[in-house]
Length: 228
Image (cartoon, rainbow, N blue to C red; front, side, top):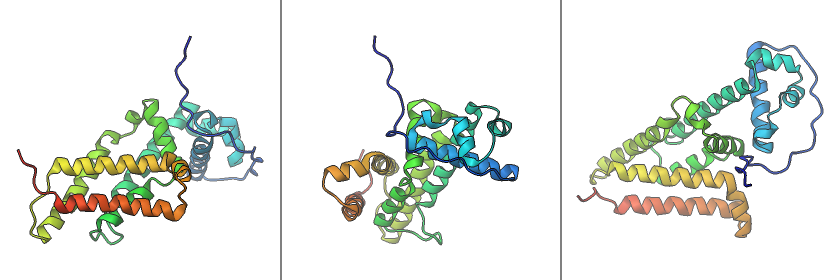
């Protein structure tokens, strides 16, 4: 009889970590360290790596202390999902603008989006959330793609106005956002493996990203308003 595939997205568990020395911490710091340790174990070992006893040892606290802060393993997982979703949203939206809020060229936009997903821990957690249906638990997760496309479209509209060019089509912008997010997400999950299979080193990966950015730039250059 067949069974459903496991959603563990990681390789074999890393070597056992020695227990961290226990120290007194504020409640806020303890919660942050627990979440950091849980995120690291999820990134390296998959969902099965989230064991409260192991996380307690990593942080240097007792198992009951984790229960005090999160009530249960499920409570810890829910909090981790909420934190990661919030951080991911901030990364993705900030990737669409420069440090001073200035407009960016297409290659800079693409590089920023790829960089926002370069943290394999974040990408793996988001993958697990999607495969297990937990992504819907995260506040605002369903609206994130719309926010990204809206921000990108505003950028394109301003750029078109400056060049006295036709106003870009909004659905075209959404498709560009979806293509970029899919490519960046795939790069974060299996990009390293695919690059090695293709014989590309780190510089080769950067060239691929710039090549991808040029494709989108060329599309933007020749794309006018959609014909009905």
